[in-house]
Image (cartoon, rainbow, N blue to C red):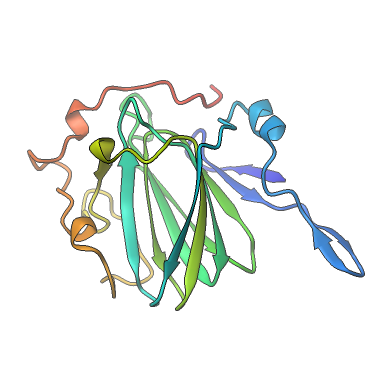
Length: 194
């Protein structure tokens, strides 16, 4: 695997190192030892798959709060998505900054999402499928979200308006809204290298 660090500490785009021959190729998509060597969390508690019928489907921005924070490794296995994560670490110099990357079945890229990052994506094709490896179990009482089009985040999505979005995702409170709990979330150690 090839780990490409982004402008936000602890966030990596992970490309595959293809070993090719006449049959095709072989590539490792996850290795606990390689993650540990970089100070990344190698635990997998759940693997999830998300299928999306229509281009322009919006999912997220989701995260879980302590003590159920999640680290994710996200990859598009069919079609294409524009994937975005937002830094919610209060003590981070990049607090509320984001990283966006196109994940496709063809480029086979993944994004490593540390704890206390909101995560979401917008589909670029019909029939897009996304696979997640997650370090924590889904815990509904600890699930939170940000509105994907919150002006304070200034995310430039490929499509300004989502073609399909759940009521829940469309109605997360805006940053600064009293219903938004960002101010009450306690900072945690991310396990990322200093």
